Every structure is written in C-alpha cells, then in structure tokens.
Image (tube, rainbow, N blue to C red):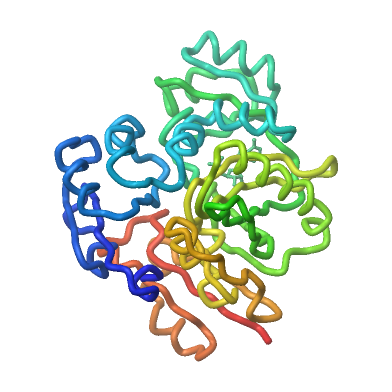
Length: 333
Ligand code: AMP
C-alpha cells in the first residue's frame, strides 16, 4: 500500500492462494517459494524485488538475483534465518548476546545447558518466530521433555537474560549507505509474542539507544544492506544485549504508519527504489501500538468507538490463538 501511494504497481509472489497482500496489489503470482521457473518469470516482470518474511528460502532467491535487483541482500536473509549465525554476526561486530550453545541431540543439549546454565531457553535454530519453536528450561533435570517438545532438530540453548525492558532499533538504509532511525520503541512481549510497542521509550532504554544503534548500523553496513532493518535488544544493567534481527519491516515499527512523519513501509519502498528517505521523526508526543492477537480482533467495533484509535485488520480470515490479526495505534498530543 505504501508503494501504491508512491505510484508503483506491485506484483505479489506468495504460495498462499489467499494472500492478503494480493488483495491490495496490481498483480499476483501464486506459486511455491522454490518454484524456480515461476520465480524467474515473476522476476522478469519486476523492476525491483523485496520480501517481507525472513523465512523465504534463500537458494531459490539466488537464482533470480541477476534478473532484477533484490533488496535487502540475500546475505541478510541467510544470517537472520539461523539463530547461531545471527548471534555470531552480532558478536563479530562488537555486540553482546546471551550465552548460547548448539544442541543437535539430547546429549549435546546436556552439554549445552552445562555451558549456558539455567534457566535457559531452547529455540530451534531455524524457522522460529513469535515464541514458536521455543521452551523455557527451568532446571537441568528432565531435558528429554524439552528436547522432545522443541527438537528433534538443530537447536540453540540460550542463557536466560535478566532484563528490565525490551526494545528494538528500527533503521532504514538507503542505496548510498545513508541511515535514518525511528524513535526507539519499548516492546512488551507475552509468551514470546509482541503485545505492545510504546514510544517514547523510558529513560532506561534511551540510555542504551546509542550503543544499540551503533551495532545495528555496523551490521547493516557489513551486509551492504538496503531497506528497513530491525534489531531486537534486551536492556540490562550491563547495557544492551542483542537478541535477533529482522531483515524487513517489523511489527515493532507498525506504529510508524500514523506515529512517524514517514512510515517504515514508505521508507522501505523509498530505499529499495533508490529514492531519498523521508523524515523518521515522531508525529505525536506519544504513540501506543497494541497488537490484536487471536480473538482480540473480534473487538474491532469497540476499538473503533474510541475515535482516536487507528485500526488495522490484516484480513487473515481465520483467527487462531497467538495469531496476529491486526493492530491498533493511538497517538497522544
Ligand atoms: P525470540 O523469538 O528470540 O524473539 O524470543 C521471543 C521472546 O522471548 C523475546 O522477545 C523475549 O521476551 C523472550 N526471550 C527470548 N530469548 C530470551 C533470553 N535468552 N533470555 C530472556 N528472555 C528471552
């Protein structure tokens, strides 16, 4: 929709016949992510290509890399799809992460837990999001239950980070390497799912913003990144701890649609199209974005009875517990 506003015609490629993006776009190709023939035909019809899901398989995309420019770079997908590669990448660029160790079977999980201690979080190395593919390990006993719940597939055991807040750095990097940052949101998660993003963030987060931004910028530059990049952090007594990155517009930046002078969506499109980037400043004194998860979305009429609420429903059709169905943003002046 941000691209259409700039006069572009969008062609959506998705494996899901009921693609919600296709509902509001000019063209639609429904094909599997690894259908190279369909991908090449699609790429041939495009001037520039982007993606908005970090689990798009990398190999098929490599096959179209020379057909049309693809932003952000495939390297960013590659790093973000593997929790170990992602944390190692952050460390290489001077970031702090939770202690972590790989677990490929029950016995290596035991060694990994010895290394990172308890409590710990067991996560699949690949394909996890919104707290899916994760378990909290309270004590080292009975690791088989956790392994059976999250494995059996390559996992990472992470030491539990004691944090006061969670926040994200949301930046956009243009084709000339110029970076703009949005205000840092304070993110509130429940059961691994983002529930709210609040701007401006409290002082405890603001004090860690500079270090976190510097890391995100270094990582972006190292990847020759173009587009919106989001890095999630824990604010701890010892400074920001990097958790993960999303090589795309991110849920913790949805407030920018009404709450910033230029939204993350518009600046992403501007960046991938090689246009100057818009002002990322706040459009209100305070902004609150609340996710509508599962049945929350059924309250849409009540939400609209507050005339200050901006309601976004994604048109996903079927609501399921834990599924993000939309969000509501409220600005305070
Ligand atoms: P993730 O899928 O890595 O974003 O994890 C989802 C949520 O689980 C995070 O936003 C945190 O609230 C929590 N979490 C994940 N990893 C850790 C950790 N190592 N220590 C403490 N909390 C964590």
